[in-house]
Length: 439
Image 1: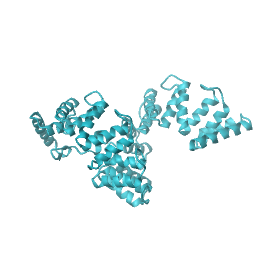
Image 2 (image 1 turned 90 degrees about the horizontal axis):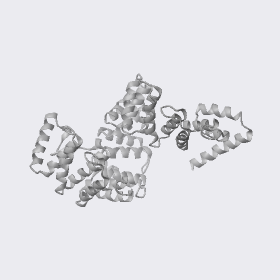
Image 3 (image 1 turned 60 degrees about the vertical axis):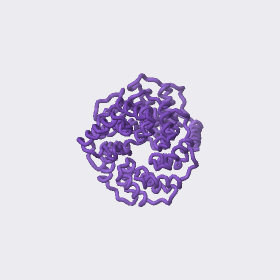
Image 4 (image 1 turned 120 degrees about the horizontal axis):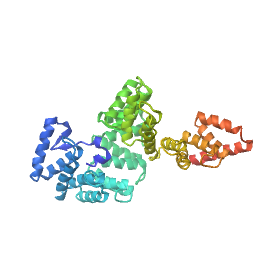
């Protein structure tokens, strides 16, 4: 059930050997009735499966209270899988107050019984610093225990650690072996990861054809990233395929329908820009909103801009600020710029140059050209800081170097008001900033 934490879309919820989602409505209802009778009669496996059904809302209306009731009963008997599933309720705060310590206790109990899901869950807690200090080395150890039992999520996560050199020495060959093992067990994630490695030539000779083959297999298994990758292949004409915007849209739509945030963004962009179709601001807003509500920073920025500019719906600076702030809080540079700009102008919030400078500096530090340009405006006009033409020109030059037209004009204008030595000093400052950032 840890798949709920990692990737609910990847999980198969099986009751009595039959995937509940594969049953027709009447059959699902009958299955729930049968499980309820068995659970009430003391069948531990039925208690766990019934609790999971109520947690997922699979075959029955989701009900966290009933999920807790049945999972708690099963876990109290010492059933390892029920302990893991109950731990998931605590780690997500579903039907009970969020309690990472209680979740970890339950996961450890299951892991001590050699339950692979429990071992994986302990590893996940270490990787994410829940209840314990973040420790990717310890996470890898626990993932290995579960992976040795062919637990797919553990195999994938261990592969990711080897791929990124987190908690273990970076080893593309080991990562590839793990992803292949995952794929052989029917994991779309494994196929997608293999596709990326063949595409990028990491740990293996670059092979666009093999990359495409793995992306296709991932997509056929309903993997979100695989579906998105296929859309990108046809949108850009990659991996030996001719550009085909209609096919690209179909793949992106499938990804979006799987609640894949990048698929939602891509479909939103197709509607927004009229790529291979008539533009539709309403549909664009819909898909951007879906991505934003999943916490995607790009979607949050797009949604904020819809409110800021009054695209499709009435202009609302308050809503714009709200969504921009969400993006900024994820350290997304364009979101940081937007928040800084709104503080500088007093749009949707009381004007505050101190806050404006804070957010603009964060944006500019990441190389955002708009943030750099706006910082130049602040220094040139003494907005919250003493007037400093050299620093203003430095920021204009950095922004202009990224083809920002406003910055180019501002730099040209400001140079006419400065001495040659000050201009050269500003140019040196810009060069130094770029070299430090590159290092």
